[in-house]
Length: 240
Ligand code: UDP
Image (cartoon, rainbow, N blue to C red):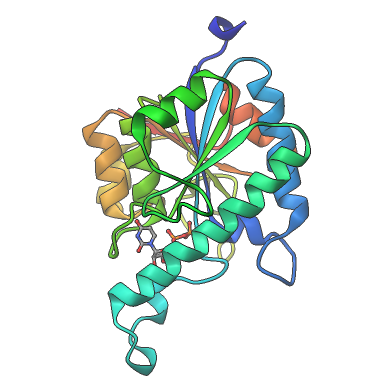
């Protein structure tokens, strides 16, 4: 029964770092399978799920630009191509357990995946398919967090669920400060004014301008993805 859940349509952002898990290679199949299983459990309930994948596990443009004459735009194109690899891996995993999935890329790669067409993406979701958005926004100098906020607004999804390797947003870095406190909720203003590392500024302000709440949660804890998608309390909720 759709109506008993908080969200009807969600945008799940999976970073490249999260996909890497503890695997020595770029993508940990245990992580993609865990995502697939939990997403399957909620699509069965009628909740529509779109996913934006990152690419930082393979290539991050901002940190590679400058080496050997690599300009930022070229570096970012490589980064966007990296997200396509992650998307196809995730799609294959989802389809292996019977979830119909479409990949749409922000720039054309028509032999590999559909191009991004908003109305078509929405139609897939209405039919119960999972849509994976790849290649970020298609533009250099942006991030996949911004792509997540943008696609969320475009397809009228109700929330950005940002899956990470930490429990949520802390008041200090929990890896260095054992007393760091987890925030249950934050306002957009608190995130931007305290410079909390949730998303880059472009992404968070896009969410703010469109009143899109953001939930930051830990995908490495079993059950969390399904919980976040169902709207159960998990991680940190950023809004209002
Ligand atoms: N990227 C880009 N434009 C976008 C999205 C991504 O140029 O709209 C490039 C950029 O180089 C980025 C890389 O793709 O470093 C991988 O994406 P991101 O760093 O956002 O992935 P994540 O941190 O989620 O793994």
